[in-house]
Image (spheres, rainbow over the protein chains, first blue to last red):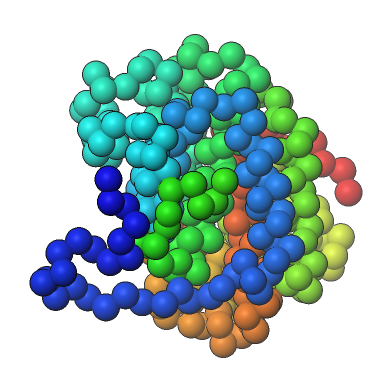
Length: 171
Length: 148
């Protein structure tokens, strides 16, 4: 599998030029970056990595974080996730048979927690998650959804450039 | 309306607090920080966060007029200076990511009013309050738990 190319695959096509990031925020605010790493490490404790990959990809899709989509799809593939389940993720509600009950509940909670500005987290969504995850696990999932949202915000605002991520680079 | 769960891994809570504190310190403008945090909490409908940060803002001397008009800052001529407006506009764009990106005009306005280090911390602060908004709203933590 070739995942190391820095540019899209068709070398004859006239793609738009790559843009530079707006702000090298991690270098400018190393204290903030360090705090994010600490938070990320704390939030992923005890969470099923395969489930977390799906959550990270879905949140990054909704938040339109190109850098995060690049990173988390590559990491998921490298960890053995199937192309099919990654491709279907943006339409998971219509392709439920690709996912477990736990994954579906987690994806639904991810969407509700990511789109907070449209309203709260509906009882129905929360309760579905609470049926699939015991309370400690659910608290972890909530933290994890929060943290991918945080990375998405840095990625989009600083316009971090997708395409250069190597699987496992940020572990 | 009842609390759904109060559980939050202490290590996560501490890391979130550390992120908030360092971002706020790096921005170096506590009153502006409260305006940013309150505006994000309005957009994310976080009752706990609004209750807490309105109390902190009052403690820090943010005017009642600014707090009253914050939800309509764009229309509140004279209540917010250009730097505050640039920060609030960025707060809204970074908070409502699902509707689209952070527009160039919004980013550039912020970049004119904040140097790069301040801007990186301002973005950090907007991210940090978005974190709190998410963990409070999803767990349905009621307002009123904070005493200054």
